[in-house]
Length: 408
Image 1 (tube, one colour):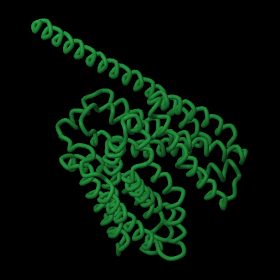
Image 2 (cartoon, one colour; image 1 turned 90 degrees about the vertical axis):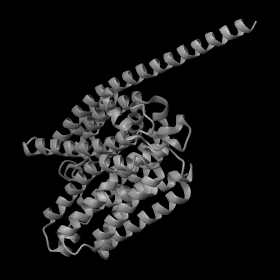
Image 3 (tube, helix red, strand yellow; image 1 turned 180 degrees about the vertical axis):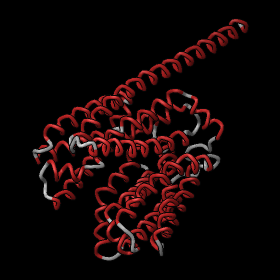
């Protein structure tokens, strides 16, 4: 593994930790700032808004620079945002600092994915992206639990300050290990022109619909486990750790299989997701089965992330592709919000905690259709390019033959 991928993974770990650790520190932050827990909960929504806004905006601003320059600049924003969060004297300043931190999130993953696939041979592009994203999944396994523990024992400010240090380590790794010439400086007009391609929007739609299935269920995993599965609250954290291990395994496996099977793998994964969620709905009241199905669900769902991320860059058919890559990160956050909202809708409608699973299964099936359409479009584009290459070779061969004939 190129050491540059390690730097990207460390950055992804820091970003994943700062995004999710607030969920585990809600009481401590509320007490420290003298506000309600629900008010602190709004910081999660504020962060999501920052990701959606920052992903295309900062990527567009950085398109004229090399990927390394852009990634370092984004990490500087990340460090400043977390440092200000750690020092925030009021709720309002913390909210502003969180939005600032979130601006770097989507763009870092978008530009980082483009850089990662340039560090390896083309046939290993998805695997390279998966090695970066695994830092995000490890944040849920290690970073969030550790940060929650530190906040409970000391202060939430130390946690956010520590995450700023992770950002500094990432900057050092990027400067030391990412080649200055990796990737190309993009052209904003060409990057924007990629959005005229129907295949790009097809993949973005696949992300928003298919991955909404994940968040429709995961957003309510704690009450699902306790209310339906009868699992004691003290066991929820270990179960979520197992879920995190599953997502890490799935991300790595998806990187390897995605390079070989592409959107066929995504279609199969979404179909498997629908089956797992249907089984989950029937067996959620059986603790062991519920835990096993949840972990399998996380493994399969996260295995598709690197494939879709690489797929949208391929679909752009432009030099670079960082803008569509960042747009896909925004699409993931739209999926997060939409899935959670749909889950809340059926729960508030009195349909119970199995209802989000059926919503997730329906979304996964819809995503399967989109994945098959993306696969078909990808095959058509590949066939068209192959035909153009063959036509060019024939023309060159004919011209060379004519030259030889005239020389003779």
